Image 1 (cartoon, rainbow, N blue to C red):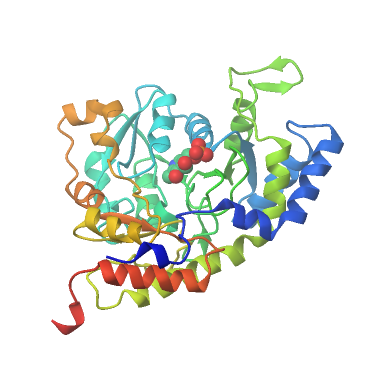
Image 2 (cartoon, rainbow, N blue to C red; image 1 turned 60 degrees about the vertical axis):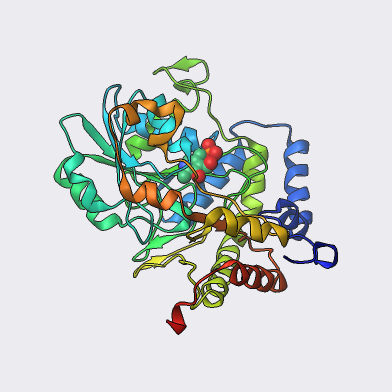
Length: 380
Ligand SMILES: Cc1ncc(COP(=O)(O)O)c(C=O)c1O
């Protein structure tokens, strides 16, 4: 056991203050301009950020909305997903992916995951397609794109929509195409801890399809086509000027921040060589942006507790897959069994990874993980 009294400071799993301090002047200026401008909802900054972020992704249109969940919900509606329809997705995701499907009145149908990337296994999709299937919703989990080519090919063959959950994948790419531009719509969250995070809730739908963009634009603001004239029934889900201004100030840093995440990920993977820690793998053709660095360890609770004694924060993304959640008991009752998803959820552990993590902290995380690991695969 380490001597906690003489230990160096803790390494939190995340610390948003560090990023703010690094770009404080720009952020304060951006916020000040909004306050002095006196216009807070759907103004110039939202339009500018929609333009800037969609261009960054390589998409024609961007529509700012209230959150990542709302981006998914409104994209599903705009893509014509109707109540009673089925949407094929994964159970190892953050619950909002599934909440959005429920909001649309549709039913999530779960495919098992690829054992290497933990994203949807394309070979598991086709057997799940029925006459009610309307869309496939791959999640670019932890910052790595799902295997989009076969997914898009299956969708085209069966006339299904593809809606990408890009909440964890700002700037990630698949054979040169950025997350969010391979399906019909890409849905981003700017939740504060994301690779590009606001200081509150915010989201965006990006798309190359003008009809989808127009529909999301209407749906986010009560179906209003012109002030007080409503052509469809909609919602109140707008990106506000303050968040847009903050995101505009942060966007120029995104690529550098993603590169720093990748550098930390490489250091971890090298540092864990020969141990029995199973590291994330960047698949061929993919640019992983490491929203999370998720390892697999056999004895997770012990491993986690060991890191805690060194003051190292960890998280589990996610401890209970959706089909085992109380709120979605209908899947368990229907006998849904996803062997790989279930096995993975019992072993995964997310280590600290954010651009502001110091090299010395990265070294300490590696040393502690090596101390917690049991086997040595190289000497076997
Ligand atoms: C995979 C995934 N999908 C959707 C969301 C929903 O985003 P938000 O929290 O902005 O609603 C999140 C983030 O929380 C997420 O991680």
